[in-house]
Length: 185
Image (cartoon, rainbow, N blue to C red; front, side, top):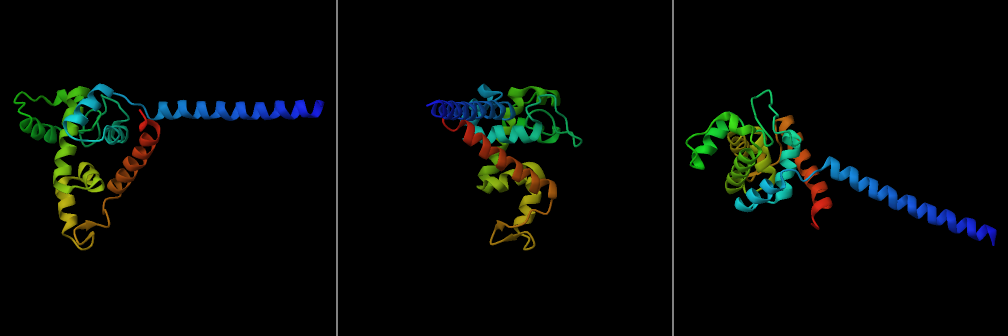
């Protein structure tokens, strides 16, 4: 009888530790993959017909949600928009008073980033191409699609920029994690 009680206690302890590990892992994932700027992300994802988890994945890879992020190439804010791209997007949005410092404002930055992603989807209709264009430049992707070294039958088979290859993989990997964590919410 004593052995049975000890065995049951060990089983209960094991199950409890397993559940505790699962809860801790979930909390770690939620910290590593936050749903930051939820109001802005949800609003502009809806407005520009984007999956909010896709937008979160782009923001995570671009800046890890840092509104003050600035890259060596001058990209600014959560979605890392350059001044030149920001000016172009502002014109499309009817904002004639664009100031590059506005890109540090998460709401403005996320609106512009979502508009730009939507614009890229209109042209490329493919998530990987959109990501490659967002990171490596729209013109580069257009050129790759007509170059047989990089594409076949209009489909990109090889991204010649290592940074862009890695970027597409990272965003897609993060999107998988975001989908696993938040798809039921």
